[in-house]
Length: 430
Image (cartoon, rainbow, N blue to C red; front, side, top):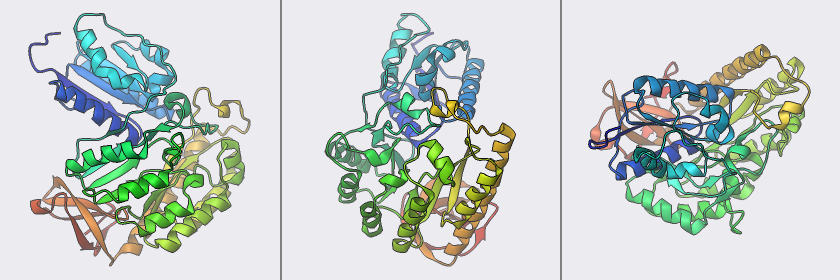
């Protein structure tokens, strides 16, 4: 490959917000080294695929992205990094066209490996994937309005369906002081909203004798960032103190993402989750008592072992009873090395998909109901710079999508906006 011209890099990210933050951080390193960014559907010198291993669908998308890259430029370097690379390096190595495979610790050194490859030190790097142990704060750089800020990595929970602890390693984070220092760097970019991301965010600081609440309190005092969202937090880690703090804080928004995973105590127990349905319901009631307009999202898995038709009726009844604003619905799929593989009560894949379809219907209705409850209210909206057919878009503090006629002077500003007319087919208010 000729290196006398400006080299180009294209990235494709699968999975969680944490992955997007890490991809953006990596991309900034390449940009600083003189690489130019192009879209993934364009010809590039280097294609980077940051992978996910939560579901088999995510892994299929990874394989498709590899084929797309090698088709666009057969001479390009193709690097596969992240969770799927961590758990299935030997499998990925068999895919024609892959040159670099890096797990979650090694991916931060991708530029180094690419430079060695360009120096003629041999194609197809085969790297042993030790358990990830290092931690690196990172944040996304592409959008000046909103950034995803990685504050924690790894998980110690080992839920029976989940391969993430094998891919991401044990829970770890920086200190409160180090994390706040990085937040100051984010503030200096002019970013108005920060989304705190992690694998098990609520365990932040546990190895430093610190707590997630202490981090929230410190960030709330930082000048320059107007809004914070907590991307996801386990129910057993969302304490009364955290709920009360968010309700009274200056900058943390009334928006929670609280994984449910199953609406049945039998299934929750088989999943090795650390709460039951009664605890989860009481948690949401506490939030709504303090923040009646709060948006509450939940992850839920359809078709896990033991979720027969009788149990699924309980799941639907429970979900309908909750003040949830919307769901992220996943269809259960087998993950390597997980305890679920050894459990009884398997559900046929067609039945799993049907359960998923029905839960998505419930979610759609929940979201419409939540939006209608907000009609006529005035909420603060952070306006984005993107333009679509002479309209601009933004989100309220409680995560309702809003649009208005484009006005460049409003980009990356927060204004109060009355939610007057709902376009249900687009899930957007004017």
